[in-house]
Amino acid sequence: MNLQLLNDRVRTETPQGAIHNVVRWVHRSSFTIRPPRGPQRYNNTGRPTTSSRIAIPDTDNLFVDPGWYGTIVVETEGTNEALADLQDRCGPGAFPPRARAPHQQPNQTQLENRKVWRIMREKSRPGEIWIKAVSMKERLL
Image (cartoon, rainbow, N blue to C red; front, side, top):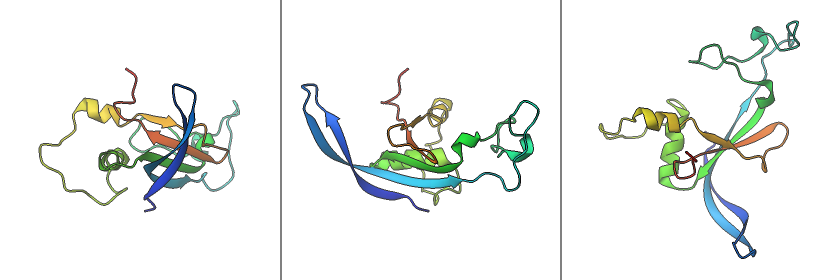
C-alpha cells in the first residue's frame, strides 16, 4: 500500500578514486513485523517457545526470528522490470494483479531466483532492516 517511486542519492567512487553523488530512481516500500501479543515464553534452553513466535506460512515448521521484529524496508531499482520482479516476489495479495501473457509462467530457476535478497547493512539500524531484491545480473553463481 505504501510503494513509492523515489529519487535516491548515493555516493559512489570511480576507479580513479573520485567521489560522485549520483541520483537514481528506486521503488521503496515498508512493512512492520510485530511480536506476538502476550507474555514471551521461553523453553529450558532460553529460546522463545513455538507459541510466542510467528510461524512462516507454507513452510515446514519455520519461524520469524525475533531480531526481525520492527520495520522492514524493501527496495529495488526504479525500472518497470524491477517493479514487476518485486510484485512477483511478494506473491498474490501484496499488489493489485497485473495482466500477464499466458506464456509467461515462471520456471523453477526463476522461482528460486526470487528468493534471493540482500540485507543493506549500511542503511539498517536497530528496529529497521533494509533489504533489496537481487537481480540475476547482481547474483554471483
